[in-house]
Length: 486
Image (cartoon, rainbow, N blue to C red):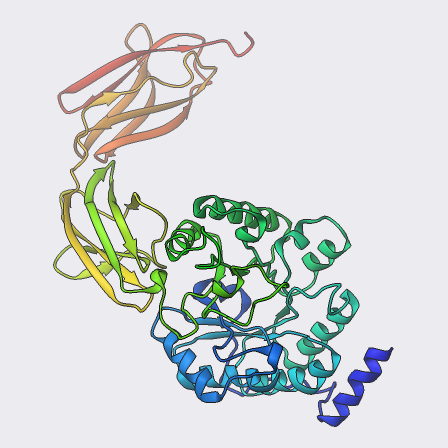
């Protein structure tokens, strides 16, 4: 009751009507949660920010940060707090441009800052059409707020804005199987876990990526159809021997697999995260340092290809490539050219680790294709390799008559034959006296294989012959009709 009374006092003070949601401006439709995976996300806390000392960034400093990020491929931003100048970030991001979707954080430090600063700023950002969803709270359950308090605030923000709302905690809290885990799995419009392998004693990038994938699969199995979007995952670049820019690059390369949806943690180093409350590597998770300089993972692209080939694979084309170096790589695009005009084959960027394989099924026999590979870095710059040429051979068909199935049969059989070209075909069943007793196929058949079924239950049990005639070709096989009662 105390929290309800406290909230209603601020509702009156800031003229926030519980009856009338503050909906986004007309014409600014929010991106639905199910479309979040279509964007490349980064977690953003400003440079020139130190909440321990009450230091908040100027608008010009936030603008400078976002202009740096806008030069790269990030199209979605997720923030943490909305107090003081942090509440202006969604509007500034809209003015800078290039960011298509925005999740605004409401950190929930305490009740006073929440209702005096964060909630009014969040509602104003929603009213301006600058926000697509909210994350209320961040690693604060049982420390800064209770489940009941958090649920109240989440419901309040959802009711007032009409936008999706969730919260974020460490992955272990979702998987613990206790009351908090049950609550987290059933509250929020999507699940927003935080997954950091280095916080769990895993210091090899490949092992960290495998651990992250395993935790993601575990929560996905519990999600009951909700979107699972990893709020943070990353690798620090200083503070410990294993915390290097090379390992950060390797971790993100290994963890960028299909169907694992995450936001890069984080945009800039945060040098205020020091002292006994933080591990030695905590300030250095940024993809950029505190002065906005790019680290190795997002630096200029450097790809060394050792092979790029296209080969027939049945009726498809298998395109493969191998690399010995991938610096600053966001992923690849693959293009096919048939008559000079290049067509992009993939949807999102092709990511993973070398060697790569892409199977192109949309090809025709006898046509010469060219394939081009485009490497894309985090600034959107590209480098193109190719072409690789391939001609899909025509499948060679010969005359043939397959064995029927089953044989012996009680009446219903499956038959198949192949011919090298389109022509008239007769497939019939004959008794031991040479009389035709059934016609299985008669008419024009297309080049290749023809398969069908026939019911011969009207024939008496015994031995028969089935034969195919196509031009000068003839072939016959034995067929046994058994007694259905046997």
